[in-house]
Amino acid sequence: MSASSDIAPRAGYPAQLLAVSWGALAQLVRTPSHSRRAEAARKLARHSLWLSMAGAALVIALMVAFDRTEIQLMPARGTPGLWPIRILTDFGKDEYVLSVLGLVLVAVALVAASLHGIHRTLLLGLGTRLQFMFLSVAVPVFVAEILKFLIGRGRPFVGGQANPFNFIPFEGTGAYASLPSGHAVTAFALAFAVSALWPRLRVLMFTYAIVILLTRLVLLAHHPSDVVAGALVGLVGAMAVRYWFAARRLGFAIRADGTIVALPGPVAGRLKRVAHGASAP
Image: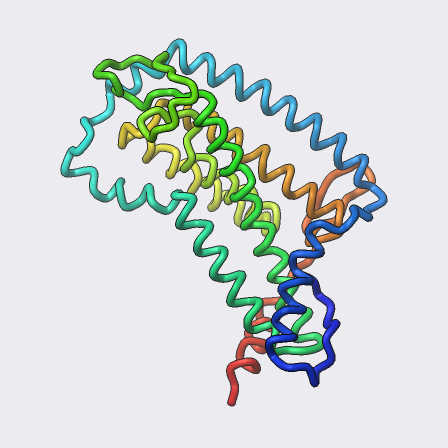
């Protein structure tokens, strides 16, 4: 979100809210201005290419040599003892993750519209980071939905057999939306986004992503190659979104070698004081 306060404090709350919302959207589509964006683009292209090649090779290997064996080892669908896994897997559902991030973004905009000066700047700095997390999930999820439709891979045992090569492209139903795994896309995209902003959370976030990946296998929602493909789409998509933000100097800086690093974010204590001030009578 834009950290500027373009509307005078005398303007009414609706005008302030409109200014905050417009600034948040406008900053995302402004012309890239970072002088090192070309270096970052080349580095992104290299990393994406190598990651995609390695991921594609692994997906094919799993499809040929492991998918059939793995799904035959999993408990049958509907097994009563799997209810904790069914609850846990929802923490990687894209609708839930995007809804939570979207609601927090709206709340930040509503509060920021009532503030001015440094208080608004601090809160909008948090808003920019929330925008990054939201788009880091939304963009690869959108790409994954297109791939699901184009590929049309059947989920495990659709058709009554353990057939990892059950494909009906353009079929468009949930039964043939196995590749890539949407939960894996969401979990790995979110893990990358949070880790990019707060590197100390990297181990925690990627542990979360791996757990979500495993729940999809145990529930026979996907083949192993599906979740690997989902993780790949999530990572590459989130990397592309990070570059988009860095090129516009939003939340990230670019070093001389093209490495993208997070800028220091709002201090937690100061944000608490801002929130307290906004809610005070």
